[in-house]
Length: 326
Image (cartoon, rainbow, N blue to C red):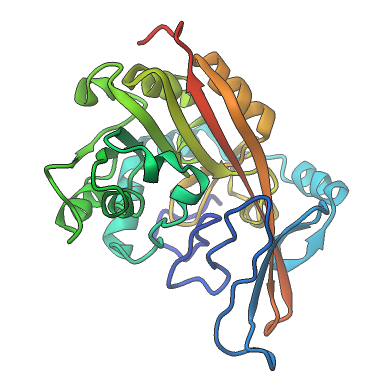
């Protein structure tokens, strides 16, 4: 039977961490360098976690087994029965409620603040008085660090969870003179109706498109494009194809909604992207690809003796001057 729609333990996205998942740890954010992250305990040198760039195509399936791509194809072939239309429609209809429940349960404690983003995109730190819209802002794990980092930045932050937006507004670092937090469903509501048409220098999409039905991907990106100035940039990071979290949901039955699209035990959903797929979507929405890469990280737990292979797609996309807004 399909997973029950109840709060449940789950892994944080790559590059994130939480306080409930021992397998989640802050990941190295520079694709060109290798870094070791340490926590107390473990071996004689005190290192428990090792996080490094990965060149080999190895992956982690359910139970922590390391598998190759041939084995992955067999796993996905066995997972050939998606949930029924009834359940697929139910998950779509209740998507907002599931995220509201998620934030009601976890409050501001699940995701770690994203202090790494200015290292990936320096304009967030050095761009001066820029207008930034963040879609899928959650409780402010991106918006609040940006407000502290750049005193001239102005942020429009939206999420379709009322609870998440309310937590953001109540946060100590929330500055109503420089941040506008609002509830919005990107699949239905006009983003530019709040931000103003073609008024934003930058849009942040950090682990948000994956939570939306694939049928709505193109519309959401066109919605974002309408809010950006010509030449404005969309900074994107999201789940990569064959990430550990995908394979952990592909082996048990009842999680698959459609190809690469799954429902978690808590009723929230996640899609896993290939590079070419993201490139095509953004180009259809009127963007040019400035940078796009599949990031691969090997996370070792020396104390427990297991490896985790994490994948995410990261890109920078520039709105073309010829883009026709919604």
